[in-house]
Image (tube, rainbow, N blue to C red; front, side):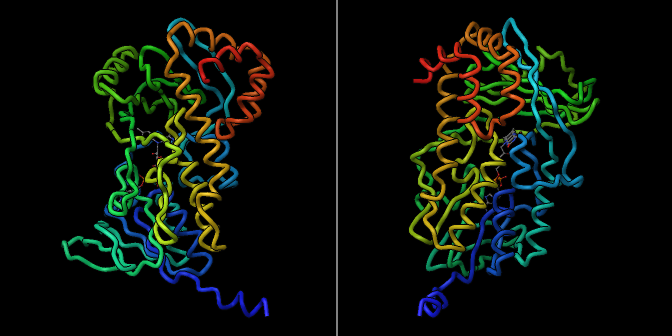
Length: 375
Ligand SMILES: Cc1cc2nc3c(=O)[nH]c(=O)nc-3n(C[C@H](O)[C@H](O)[C@H](O)COP(=O)(O)OP(=O)(O)OC[C@H]3O[C@@H](n4cnc5c(N)ncnc54)[C@H](O)[C@@H]3O)c2cc1C
């Protein structure tokens, strides 16, 4: 009797995903693998372009893709050098650098091989009566059946806008350039403090001769970026290309679904770590969670509990850092340079901030001073 009941549960036949970034293509792969009919709508002609990302990922990535693929992996990073106004400290880290163009294509190929159908050069316009409306490359309006519609269409998500889910989201603007020079291939650099009071600046090496240099902020991004290039003494002739993009700020009140038919994931849902602006891993995790919810008919918000909790902690740490001045950063770097902290940082990744912060405080109780700022 129970078996008969299970068989009559109606599964959605057509799942339409807007956006073929990492979150959208990974979700398409997970659902197509399980036999769902999946359509992915992507406005660009070439998957993964234009690139608007540094591509640095913590070792948490290995929990999702245990085998790194040469197709997208371009560098492994074992050290981070943090700079404050008067101090610098080198800490161990276990990160990778990926080529976003190739990573997005890697996920697209996996999804396509599993049966997902991609509509490139097609722009999502709106959703009505279980159909997504899209305009194709010749501006013809087409209807695509969507028992479920998923917005994986990035920070300015049209899916969110057209389904009253956009809300009052806020953003950082990220500016980045690929540059030629001499770099330490195994070390990435982070610049904290008055250089960019509401975020940080970075230099991530692709190799010994090419690096990605960037900064993100809510205000005056061009001036801050030019100033950073000046500090690093980068000449215009060293610049290979420039990239820019928006980074949404996580907000626990952000609505991410409407009934059991419309869902948002990744940047479209503001699932980004507020400490670093990293959105690839949270987006991939959200894709796994949403796939599980669609397959097992579970509640998406409730299932996101653990990820939401982590993103909330990142946001709390960001709010604390926003109140730091140069002196606070100097003191923090001095504490992080201790041997105990070093060992903790070796063990935990920033994608598990709760364990990382707790263990750091046990190793270095003076960090508790900063909890005052957090609270
Ligand atoms: C300068 C910068 C550096 C960054 N560095 C890092 C980093 O080092 N590590 C990290 O983890 N994160 C980083 N991020 C964040 C990261 O790039 C995003 O979190 C990630 O790309 C989000 O993936 P997504 O699949 O949710 O959305 P996206 O990658 O934005 O993909 C959305 C897709 O939807 C498509 N689309 C949009 N609207 C429509 C429409 N109406 N119709 C059809 N298609 C549409 C777009 O073309 C795009 O392909 C960085 C961001 C910036 C701006």
